[in-house]
Image (tube, rainbow, N blue to C red):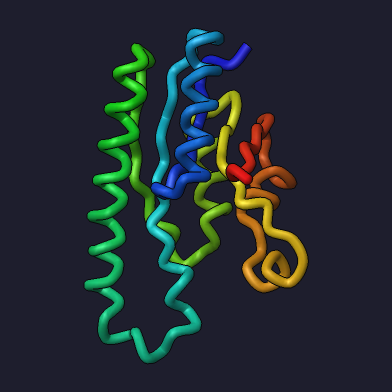
Length: 148
């Protein structure tokens, strides 16, 4: 049913829970995984004081993403599942747009991702990339909640 599972990761405990769920599904479905790390340049848009440092900050984020992808890929490989890893720049857009683009272009059969499940004011202030992915995804999305 699901041959290609896209797993956006960011190194958080929540995304690690999403990866574990994706590994289980991939075992059951005999699917392959694609781990996606998005370099979120959008976070610097409202930080003019950071402008002189942005290239260095983005490069640090990119390096961290490569490390997270390597660790995640190793975990998937140890489970005996075919895996690809990809790092994408957000291009100043929201992370959700990059995830959706990847789901379409790869093409994924399923997206599995962690969600922090924010509510109330923090949800209004921060928005939810997971919510946007669910609303706009061309394929099914499985959200894995953070541990209580």
